[in-house]
Each structure stands twice: as structure tokens, then as C-alpha cells.
Length: 571
Image (cartoon, helix red, strand yellow):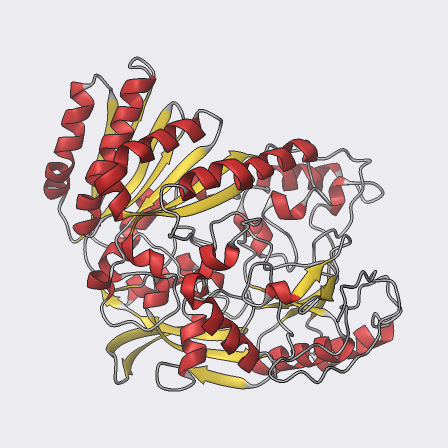
């Protein structure tokens, strides 16, 4: 087939291709609201009635900040709460990431500026039953509409939204049950959660049962969504591994509308793909059953210092020494989150399960001694908590990282070998990028095979020898000039992330905290697992109902200038 250039508004041409082993969608392009093939108002109403009134038409959250719907009181409230994720995750369509929202309807742009849907979906289904899932899949298939899976909307890469999309919105699937789980591979406590359960909810429920559960740092992230499906690092990862290492059972509706159970012994290929192979492409998760662990005490350390009074050379010497010591912390079960700019270092926190405050102080003493030697003043706080929940609420939940952060993003795994053999080069990269305005966030952890034991999943193999999962960010101020932000995004893709990649060219990065424009995203996000993941995608979604940017199989489509999707495989 020759390369085609087809506008969404043009007539859609049905086609049949008799290639062996490759499934194709029934039409070249998904229908958009401007197309004649878009469902009529009566068809949408009929679909809504079939769901019992669960269809939600998108009304942009920031609409009251723009004419003719301007309301100063409501707009002021929205502006004051815009960085709170709770404002957005209660919406069926709001986009948290400014780089994806693209100021289509922004509370900080002028009142007279336009308010359009932009990259938001057109409709959402507030799904609460497997039937809601399968009905929505069937409607999207029949009407040839882009289908999107949305949980909370915590998403840097635009996977949970899409122009002209119909979303399966799982946010209100709020069930939690603790059970004793038995399988050939695992016998012990477990938690079964609905797809809409968020980290803070599962942490609190686990604590009530004297358990801990591996989850993310952000209280409002959906525990069973793209977080776990994409791998999922945690403050407890150096003790138990990734979130994907905890999975026992998935309940999922696939692209054919079938309700399936996936474990290591039943539909094991789907289980493998969902556990680390990325969300939004194999099926829609209805529930997740994951390991629960007996509760324990936790000690957390917070350390901060700046370049003020010491100078840049001494400051970055301290940063380098911290990284040199980091593998010792993670080998002891610690997980660190360090935010580094060209003038500030904030370790907030360093989490140590099952360690006392005295033991943590002793472990940190060599680092503190070095800070004293090179003349850097620091602040330190060590807090011993009786439970993980107490630690989380004291030291993790209050962090500014809980807020919606507008930024350009990039990422990379830094292998342990780089710190052991080439730490000076790592320090040089940290210095170079931060002096150009980039914030370097290093999640220090140890999810090696020794820690995680017998697991079967598709998490990127580079996780297993990573000492750091790095996130690079540059600021995106409210009301920023889009052209300026695009320039920074280009530098992220072409300059700053490659400087990290040069340290470890064979490594990868955490797909949920990465550059949406990563050129080699298949290798960087999935590594050697991609081909197998694509085969599984074809098995459970042969008609390509599911699409998400940088998800497995996404390059079978080409995104048009207006955001529409057109089939491109083989062109």
C-alpha cells in the first residue's frame, strides 16, 4: 500500500486487506466530531440510555474562566486549586499535564481567549460494571471512534486522553477487599482493588488490617492503572520490588469485549503484559489483586543543603558523594527521592523500612561528615514511625511533588555500574543540565533479582540493575508562551535526555516518567520485551480498539494535525 495523506474530514474508505497474520481496523481513520460519520445526538442519547445514564459529555473544567461562560468567583477558585490533583481526578476529562492540555482551555489564559476541547475526549462513560466496559468497547468499535482508558488522569504522556475520544472512566470503581491468596507461586495475604482505588485509599485500608501495600508516592494516583501496569516504583521498592512485582491477578476486559482473568497460570501472557508492559493497550483493567505484607516500622530522613556559602564546586562534590553512597542505602532497603537544582539539594525523604532512627543516623554519618569537611551547612530531620502509613503521611504526602506540576519531562535509568565505575561523569551531567535550568530528580532504589525473587512480568529489564530512575523537568509557568515551552521540550528531547543516555546507552527509562517525544521509545520504555508485547496486543486486541501514545502498537496509527488517528501500518 502506498503512503497516503488523508484528512479526517474526507470520506472514509472501507477496505479489505488479506495479509496473513496482521489485523487491520475496518476504516483508515477514526471518526472525529467534524465528520459525517460521527454519531448523531440521538445515537449518543440511545447509548447513554443503554448505560443507565452513565455517559458524560465533556465540559472543560476551566470553562468558567472564559467568555461567554466567565464567572469570576468560580474561576478564582479553579485558579487557586489548579495544582491540586483532586480537582482533576474528579473530572472525567481534565488534563493535568500542561504539555498535553496545550492551553486549549486554561484558567490562566485571558478571559477572551478561546476555550476548546483540544486534546480532551468528547465523551466519557463513568464505568462501574464489566458490562459498561464491554458496551463502550462495542459502541466505539461500531461507530469507529477513538477509545481512551482514563483512571485519575495522572499522565505525563497523554495516554488517558485524546481528541474525538470516548473514554472508559474507571475512577469510581472503589472496592477494596483483603484475602488469603493461594497459587502455585504465592500463598499469603493479598488485596483486591477496583480499578479506581487510589494510593492513599489502599494505604489507609491496608493499615487498618496491619498490612502494607506497594504503591506510589502520590496519594491520588490510581493503584491499578497505568502506575502498576507501567512498572511502578515505590518508597518500599528496595524491600519488595516494583508494583508490577506484586501483581497476582488481573480482571480485564479485552478488545473483543471479553471479561478475562489473568494470572501466571490463567492467560499468563496477558498477565505478563499487564504487569509492567504499559497501560491503555491490551485491555481495560477492572480489578487488580496484589500482594499485601505484614506491617512494620519505618524511619525517614530528610536532608537539604544549598550552594550558598560554599560554591558550585563544593556543592556538586557533595552531590557526587551522595550518589557514591546511595547504593549502600538502597542495599539496606532504602528508597531515596532527591531533587537537585544548580543551587539546591533536597532529599525528601529517604525511606528505610524496619530500621531505627539510630541505625539510619549511623548509616548517614559518612555523608554528613563529608558535608562538614567541604564546608556545606545542611538541615536534617530523622523521623521514626510505627507504621508505613504514619511515615507516608508525615514525610511523603506533604511533599510538593504531590501537586500537579507543569513541566517538560524526560527520564533515564542510571545503572549501578555507572555509579561504581563512572560517578564523576554522572556528576558532570547533573551539573551541566541543572546549570541550564533543569531539575534533576533521582529516585534511588534497588529492585534487583535478589530483592524481587520469583517474578514473571514485562517490566523493562533495565529496572533490575538500575541505581537511579531519573526524571528531568523544566518549568512550565501558568500562562506560559507555548512557543517557549516547545523550545524547552525540544531541548529535553535532543539535548538533556541524550546527555543521560550517553552514560548508559543500553539502558531504558520508566515509561510513566519520561519524555513523550522519546525518539527510541520502544527500546527506552519496553526494551527487548516489545516484540512479545506486540504479539500479545494483537491476540487480545486484534482490531486495534485500544490506542495510547507510546503504548505498544501505537505506531500502527499516525496522529493527524487535528489530533485524529489514521491507520499507518505498512504505509
